[in-house]
Length: 263
View (cartoon, rainbow, N blue to C red):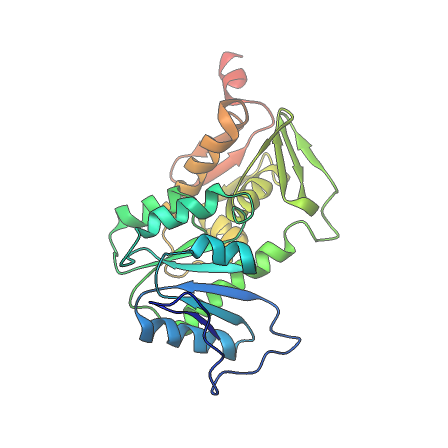
């Protein structure tokens, strides 16, 4: 485990009770949390599961750390002592080198409004403290598994096109009327699921299971928040294909909703 010191600008050497790196520890997880005991507990559980944790106790230089090490996923505490965690999040998403890295927000704020704000900003998941380290690791594995499988399945075509939307699964690329659009990995999977199953009503539980990979401790509002954010990013022309089925879920239509209403 490498630790970015609270008051020093260098990494400490791995501790003797950390597992030595091997060929299986290829996925780095950047952990940013000012609670040292909790950060080290999370890091220990990550090491036990074959990950290489990099721990930072402050928000300072997080963007530089992420760009230097390109972690597979970032665990970001929102209540940091020096910089607002949301500001750190925005910085990571604004830089092309780190924009596609999945981020799980960690916070002691359990209010639904705080969770919605985090998800609307584009977080892949939101975990409130206290939490089970085992559950956190399972969520990390789920996000990484989906990120790796999206676009690599032999069942997926090289290019998925419908209406104004073009998806290139192998490269996680999205084009709306020929213009590239940047989505988070979760937003991309959500759009791909809708497009590939166009015409079908996908209920929220189905989307939670097939996009997020789990349903426990996740509210339906999570899906609604991501749909709202997705619509904003792809713009009104493409969003006009996504229909809300009140009380059930969502459907990607064969025709834009405005054209259907006009006919």
